[in-house]
Length: 268
Image (cartoon, rainbow, N blue to C red):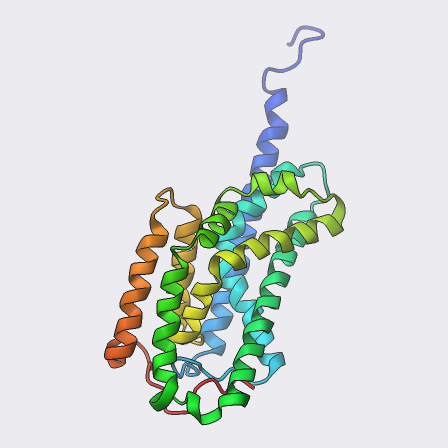
């Protein structure tokens, strides 16, 4: 029997343990959501990959597919950031981490709308000149080379640093409440877009409806954000350069239907 006035030795550890377990559950839930996104993508996009500048149909279809794709590709790599946010806001609503994740996806939805607008405008202005056997071939290779170049820029380095070490960004732009959670998620998403937009452009050049290329790009993003080797952007740049050269000189050797038989970028 315990002495009067003496607390059990582990009383102070219980809340910390419970909080850590809750964050682990949050990460597991985010990964589960991503897994559902991958399953939906694999089922829905089966047979739709027509290589670079694959037709994504109307705006509503594109936006819905894009958000699911971003959830599948990005949530595993951003899960540690959301868990850190949950740790910092341990006294806030349990809904706050999910609002943060929602704000993150809202920013990526905006990036998808911008990509759709660029593709639609290019298709409307240039038409058949973007066909694969005309400018489309070179455009796909040039996009990959440009993405490789961006990997080595100071802006990429700054954005990647913010993604890898988000605590300073949290403390420097703190917003409380549920609205603050949404806004902070959108801010983190903006840093992520700055870090990864060129890789997403490369995905369009390789085949945005290809689950295999999606998995490769998602793996690159996760590695750059989480692995300790800080020279990964250089390795990514080399890989993209190789893919760009292959796309230009021998696209048939790339896996998947890489040579479209329809005009490029019919995204409208």
